Amino acid sequence: MQDCSNCSEELGYDAGFDDPPKGEGHIAAVFNPEDGPSYVCSETRYYCSAECLLDDADNHPFGGGL
Image 1: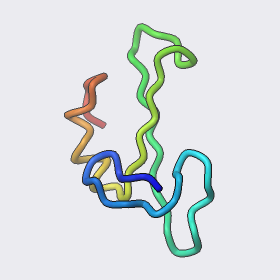
Image 2: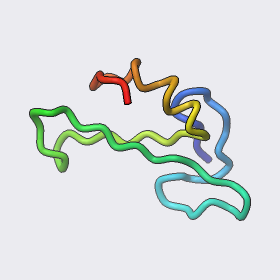
Image 3: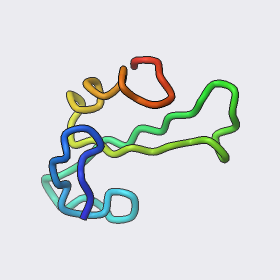
């Protein structure tokens, strides 16, 4: 089980490995600092909705709103 990266709503499945059950889903966002290669520095967060992703964009540790 995994929680939304912003609102802590439970996704009900492991978003990094499992396919969402029918009728459910998530948004995966990969953030990379501009000066680092993605294979070293990338961070993936899982959001329950577009609203949660947008709400979190300005608070992301790598900065820069979406």
